Length: 207
Image (cartoon, rainbow, N blue to C red; front, side, top):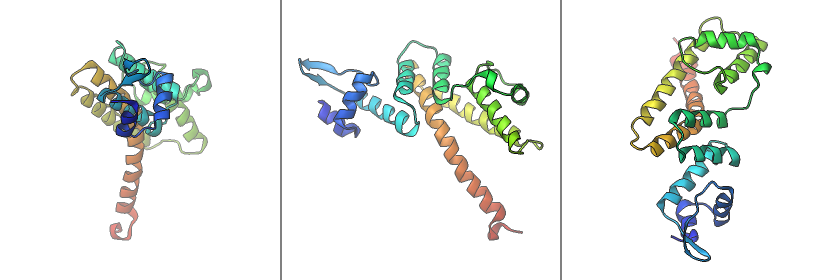
């Protein structure tokens, strides 16, 4: 298909497609003449992935290019996970995180295997410090239940990845699951909060 048809099928303006081509997000089409290129369903699929990462995942062009490159590289799935996690995480310096908060995070997930530089560890340490600063210290297992929910979500991610047959399909699921999974988990939590609130505090749920 020509670029105009690609634009129509994918729902992406021609100018935007050209921009993605220049930025290396979208692979080039097959040259059919000096000034023409042909595109196929794989380009449509890639465009939809790009839009998902940018619009729903909130990634920058640079971050989206990094994770897309990792999908189509020879990197291991562990390396692709690392790229995906780093692109969705704010860059933090361990020196800026309260050591006591990091120790508490390490104690909370002491039965997990992870690297000290995991961006989630640093982010969790900073969040824990902020909870403390506003007087919301966990004294009754609150954060332990967060840990349980996080583990269930992570196992669901890996279970889904293992259903994919090719390395490329698995890598794409790693990226999509990490980037869009964060957004989905947060959205479902909002719904769940209302559900539980209605159960506990609505007139119908009051004993």
